Length: 45
Length: 224
Length: 225
Image 1: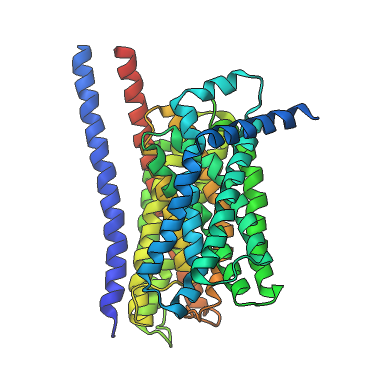
Image 2 (image 1 turned 90 degrees about the vertical axis):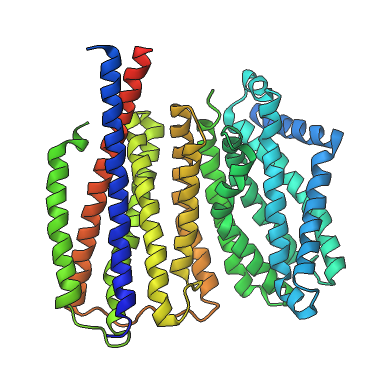
């Protein structure tokens, strides 16, 4: 079971990285939603 | 003579003459190349065996960076002085512009190399003026300018201008640099043509592929 | 654009979840430990698929770039941009996981092995692609220039690999492993490949959807002004 630390590190990094990317996508989506709301308000209807 | 060929040569001549008038770019690029070599010499402590081992690498680092400097100048003056619109308003095909500028850059680089190589031979007492090395240099430079001219036109039209060219260009040029250094190393060691040949083949393949591709794609960069 | 339709994304999400779960099961429970490298060899089952999918992503950029220059339809540029982003993410993962794998096996964090070095050059080329995109303000110009870089970059890849491979055979390169793959190992590899590919497509679709929303928003803004 030597090196199990490295094994764990690899899988952890892969999923953390992908997760971080998904989070950035979600954040951008939220931001876009907010801008759409602002635009709707400023268009008045 | 074929009218397109005339136009290509005209564009090439225009660039060369413009440069010959002031000579500012060729002098700076030359001095830069020599500086790179000298600084590397200090960096490696002028240790004879080490210098011999890294000599081809040093040479090609100097050429690669000098090349980027030179390529930057291919399109920046056009952009700054709005010459490009002038050239485009003539009935000249974009491909011809590409070839003309590429040939001018090629000749320019060859001039720089023609001076740098003997100086290098002098400073390091290494036989770099051999036929294999000269052949390698010419072929590698051709590949350089083939892609470099295309990327130079691209870089000039971005916000970062000169700075983006090395970032864009050097990774793509990696095969040429590797092959040129390897081939030069073999040549300096006096090896027979056999192994050197594989490296030269890579350079030639690069040249052919990117001459064709850049020629076809250049259209899309200069579209306004 | 029908690709970004939510239903497709949800289907991919479900598929990805299943495939990833099965692949993890295979990697950590089912597949036997490899003799030479021990437990750390299991990295192989994710490292290799991630590398292949990175390459797939750049191939998608290549095709989308050609299609954009040919058809001038914006959707191709959106696909290229999204795929390039993902390609860089995946290539970064290849470099990091490759490095972590190298440390216990070869004792060093980095080696100029042909595959790792090519990945590094690949990373540099596509980071430059993303930089070019960010350094141009006008949409159409950015799309056009990026397409050029996407095409040249991809064509360069085999030549880069060839040169680095030839260069690498001069130094004794650490062997990844020799011999064939036992059937369980092959199955694990393939399922992991399917899992990572599925995740790639899922992320690609979501990224495209966001880009489309951005475009629409900008259109409305411009009409409004």
